[in-house]
Image 1 (cartoon, helix red, strand yellow):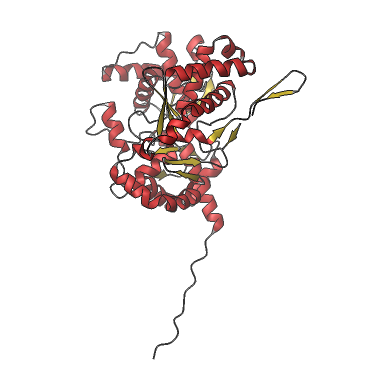
Image 2: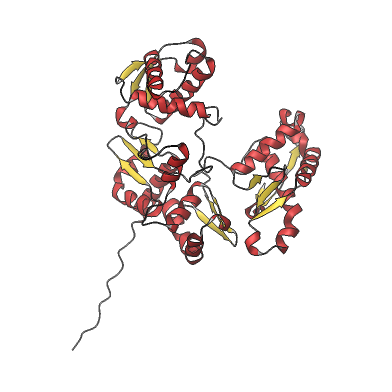
Length: 406
């Protein structure tokens, strides 16, 4: 005779632990190298506390490897392949040039066999030697290469790999000032994220790094895309990925909300990953500033110009809509005429440069792709933005037309 079945209650969820893991995961996605003595020391301590669970989350969820050591935590992010990687940026905000990347790699190679503490001029000599061994021509007496090397050294200081103990590295390029540098070897060892074995070109390295893990497949590929570039387009998916996405997209909302605190906005054309806190990004949109204001004004009007054609197109053809060059140019003239007074002086004096800067903002946000003929291909997600604009007069009054999201 069987007795009554006893249901065991589900284990209670530790809400505080979930929140701590989410905070650490977000910090690692934004800053893949955390230190105990860095600006994100609190998040590093959380990464150490939840090391095992975070290692599993990143490996299973995104195919990324997390290395946590006593003083550092390094998330090995694989990238998205060719033409999809965010550039490393200088302190000024300008992207790294190919020459700067070359000098950065040469510096890392030189540091791997350097002393733990050295003068910047000693490091320059070692970089010269490393370049000669690699068959790469550099002239570190020339201003261009000195600036490229300075960008590399500054990036390594910001990453915590180098520490300026004494001197004036900031003015080294022009004034040849001395600087004493400490090399954090344990952090240096964490810098290289991908194996170079079997790689014969930069393209091969990008392709090899971007391959999803065997266990992850479509799930890992799509999650990576949404985490790293917030606009997902169904036209970018393989057949396998599209099938998985159609089955799993509603369930993915829960994963993104719990693990990284992102809200998924689902659309027929794909999805957008939104951060309610506005922190998990290196490219904000709309954001503040003259170029971003102009970009938003342009975007809304260009979207209006292609909306009727988009509504008539089959669903599979609505992801990107073409705006011919004449429409883009006419829209730019209208916006400049109406709202140019509210833009900064350089943009008022050079409308062509203003338009180019605004276009780069939209390209960086994943909403626009320029075409060879001067037109734009505009993503369907652009239709979610509506504008509420006003110019403030010196007396504080506002002349309004109508920054909001639909």
